[in-house]
Length: 111
Image (cartoon, rainbow, N blue to C red; front, side, top):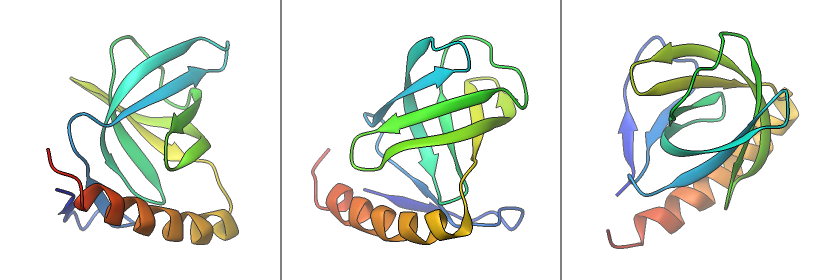
């Protein structure tokens, strides 16, 4: 089940996602790594990932059902990184629709 995360410091509502949702992130050197998606919004995502990524490092996130999204590492935490998407407002608006469809699809699945 998808759960909303309430955090007044966030610009965009963030959705918790099932623990088995995976993504691939690619760094600026082209190295790819698998990650678990902890939460996502039109502004960014929390990723559970091994390895070090410097703050402000460029990454691309690819997730089935959402697509490929460029971003930058906004923060690091014990289990991974927070990525802020580097997309235009027009792309954010389109992504709102994609996330709505994604949320409906995930909510209808059994875990």
